[in-house]
Image (tube, rainbow, N blue to C red; front, side, top):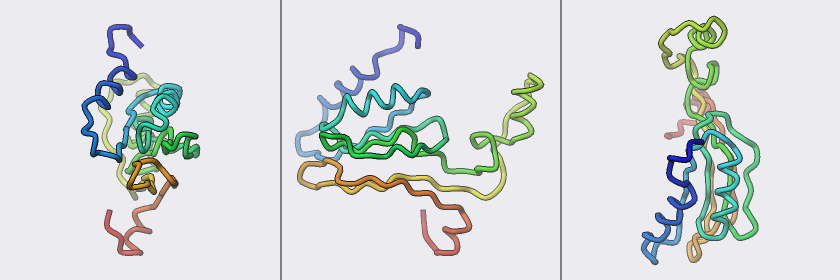
Length: 149
């Protein structure tokens, strides 16, 4: 990454320094492109925040865990949207851009949505994570169970 960008780790330190002492539960969303940055942030904040959950790449990872000092971690929670797509975008338009190098506008893919989330069980007194679980539900499953998301 360009060296002109601010440091992700210093930004996290600054944010935690401003946190009121009575706030115990802290969720950090690391919106980053590369897994290594997300993993490093998880280890860096282990024991100081409730969870570090990665976003941005749209593809869920299967590495949810509670780190040794009590921080829940997941590299990427995944997207909510149509999975019959290329990371949420229309397949044909995406292929034209990637293969044919055509400068076509991308539109959001149409079709059944998939909902991804992480369910955290936290200790209210410490704010640390007891358990983390990935959730994935298709739109038709949500409607069938009459769930609201």
